[in-house]
Length: 120
Image (cartoon, one colour):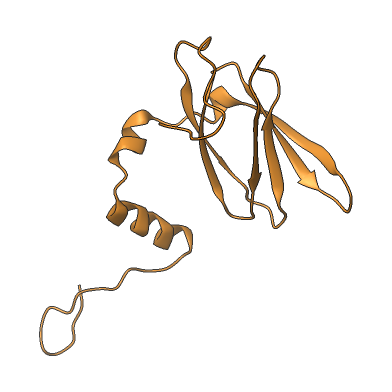
């Protein structure tokens, strides 16, 4: 998985693909600070999924925004956020649309099979 900014340091032989979901109603800042010579920080909006590569020993810090500062709310080992590469490579636009519909609680349109209007 390519990251345009801040690529995973070359000292990590096998970076892992991770996913973090902001399940709160507040904006969060996700930050990794325990990897030398690497800077990773992203804003994660409510309900947003953050997909990223990181060394397996990385720790993801979750900071919650307050009036004029942030508070460290959680620290999660990235190996607990790891997703399978097969899942990532299987994502295509139709599958992503279906996942978004499911995440938003929407039912996809059903096909009408006959002129009476019965649907499957």
